[in-house]
Image (cartoon, rainbow, N blue to C red; front, side):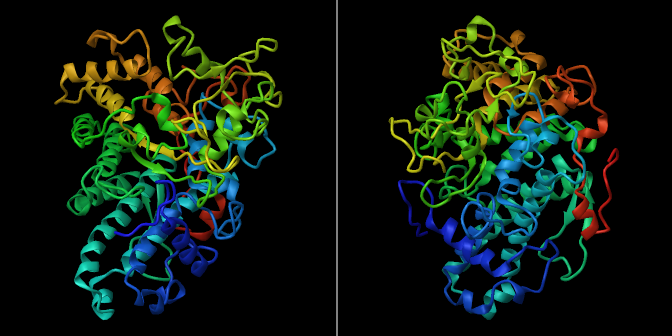
Length: 540
């Protein structure tokens, strides 16, 4: 396969062919339309167009439109409320106990971080529509690569061989999108390449989505590249195993059925795929995390690139947002000195996870508690006061060799959607929850490997040290600001109710109980209006 790569980073295809595809679609309607409204036959005279069309599916995970980082190809949504990784971060992290966003006049953020959202929230709509956009792009790719269409276009045998893998990747990205719909909303507009055109789609519930995703990922396994054997940033079998492991670990939440043995089985498949931990924890969150030692740990990342893929995605937001109002520490993060002036801070419950002395030099502890002359108060009693609350420096636009990303605002740092450290933690949790087939010696070794890599002196753990409560805290230390926390707290029974409260939970300064219905987000009012087959989730 031919790729044009800049600094071992992003293929030009990812940008140029997303542009080619979305410029033909305009404002995207999630209802499948006649193929002639998308790409004409002229596009397919060059057989390289099939790879370009696949790049459009990937591109939708990083880009929002064709006219720069502030544009959006989805009518009614701007780039700040519809970039996939950013809205995923907001829904999974900002709504939980790790992060606070200072600028509550930004549409939708106040309601999310105070857990007072409703069906009109623009960020919730952004996630719903952007995820369905990936499904629509994948479906279009699959419609354009049927045997009948390839025969009619006299596509060569060599290209047909490539298309088998391309189709498997499109189906995986579609399954990934349905996975997030299942997790966040509990239902979705269900559309495949075989759905009738110009009709309202069916609405699938959680059980139906679970069954579909599981069957799809198993069906395409043989057509995907082996783990770590595909071209960056494309998916492979390791990503399929990861999605299945995540689904099975959360199966009691999704379908009321324990599937921890199945979770273990898929964790073992990922681990056997040849991945290894980055030599330095922070390599996973640096501008060269596609080429430094993290390339062996990150199973799949969302592309960000200061030259080709400008976006207001999660890493651009977090790195600029990590710059403190007091500290002005942007230069050390590879962005402007003032960054976004204290946009992001951490809630006190997260900071408490690093209070013990063993975490003083832990690489995962990047808390900044102010300058020597201006210490910070860890408590945030006034969200608008950017001098309150600790900040962190986990993500950066610096490289592992000491350089900066090419742009001082739009960072080069990919967002690590899935990485091996998470698999290690899932393996141990599934074992503790009763899954069979784990090797206890391996379980302990995986946890000690994470501690050793973090330079934590408590790296001689025994099986008796590994409890579910310990795992939940360790997941927060290892995986904070990576888009997992809401899901974790729900699985551990600590998101809703009042057994665990955090600052500003439920809009209370010290946190208040949340109703159980808030384990799911509402179906956006605009989505209900466009498809009467959808039904609103209870409580909204």
